[in-house]
Image (cartoon, rainbow, N blue to C red):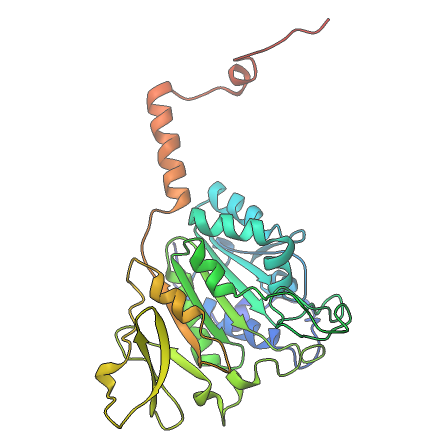
Length: 338
């Protein structure tokens, strides 16, 4: 990926379009961190593409001064796959939400992930449909009362991290919109990963689902409700750093340090292990029973879709020569209709 010689600034990535999100929306935080990260990466603007579907998050390409597509509902991964395969030198980002990506777009999402296409997928999760005015979404918790579930949702929610791991994602991470330094680090990690990187960002919809993630964003209490995943380090959390996560057979459990329990008893996080079983266990840790993990769950290497695609084309060309479109049209079973 080519980079520019002159240092870019965050303002270089901000378009001249008026940002039309509700005041106080968590999307502003993500947009601001993205412009900072893009400037730090130093990738040329004409080598960068943002592709989105439908929803509040999907206005994102308008606000980035790069190439972009505001596509149709749920289809951003498919269109982004086409972009990446047509020009693999591009840095291609998919911006989606819990409604766009996990409802009508779920099939598109899982196939892009399982193929390990070189896309950076950022899923804004606010656990609500914001653009259509407050219906429950695929990630809304059971019992959620909304305009479309006045007596409480009876659906079991999708857990995006578990879904991504389940279809073989090679890079999976999570952060919170207001935790700006950590978010920047996760965006950079996602950008640097070859193949599909999947980053879930907890994002506040202050109009229709305000404070849904207060437990993970409130500075006074969050350290007791989340655990940061750091490669090679034990899973310790708590304001006083006195609690941890221990593996007990095929389950994880919260333990308190002291009284015979030491750091050596805790689970050591390894984001590079090939088997995603432990990463999946971490993805099943949900508040309030557990502290919710923030950081990189998995980062492994695997063959990348577009690399294999071009290798296949090269091998076919060596075997059969350069094809001609006219010959292809008139090959195989053809009929002449009178």
